[in-house]
Each structure stands twice: as structure tokens, then as C-alpha cells.
Length: 120
Image 1 (cartoon, rainbow, N blue to C red):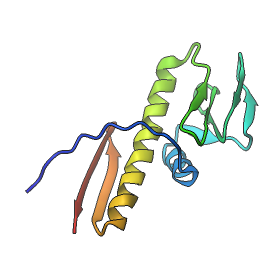
Image 2: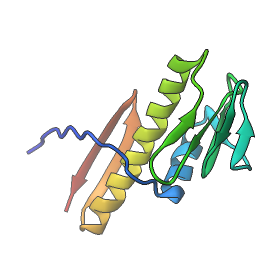
Image 3: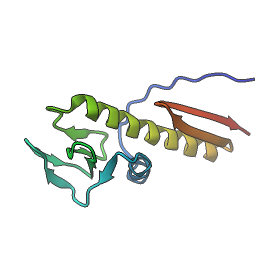
Image 4: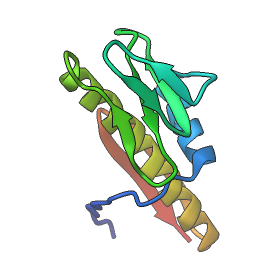
């Protein structure tokens, strides 16, 4: 028997190790070795600062779930990057929780959608 689950989530606090892993899985951004950088028009500060390899723009994740960014001039690109990282973050988090509950899990992000299977 198979079924589809749709999960909506709002992240209240980030697990920074899982977030770093999600960023590293997505090859279009890189982790910056600083918690504070100067973007074009503002300072971007957070617990994990990343840089878009295409535009050279920065955004940051804070442990409390906030994302710090100045989207002026690149809001569409930023939304794509944020969504891709969040999908990978949630997929990894779900996978870990299901494995702890005794399930064998195979989750991946494919064409912007988390696809997976699980069994006991």
C-alpha cells in the first residue's frame, strides 16, 4: 500500500549541523567563514552565513529560525536558493526522525520535491 503525505512546516529553530549539511548538498551556495559580512547595501549577520556562487550575494541563518537577507535586486534567485536549502534540511530531519522510530528511509529531493519511501 502506498500513500502521499504533504507536510507544511515552519522552522522554529535550526539544528545547525543538519543545516550545514543541507547547504553543502546544494552546490549553488557556499558557507562563509564569518558570522557577519557586508552585502551590497547592508550587513548580513547570523549563525551560518552563506554566499550565492552566481550573484555573490549573502544571506544568513540564525538558530532561532530566522533568515537574514537583503533581497533587493535578487529576490527571485534568493527564494529559489532558500527553498532548495529548506527542502534538503527538512528531508534530512524527517529521515533522521523516522530512522530513530525504527523505519528504514530513503528520502531525496528531486526536481524541487522531496521524494521518498519508508518501511519497517
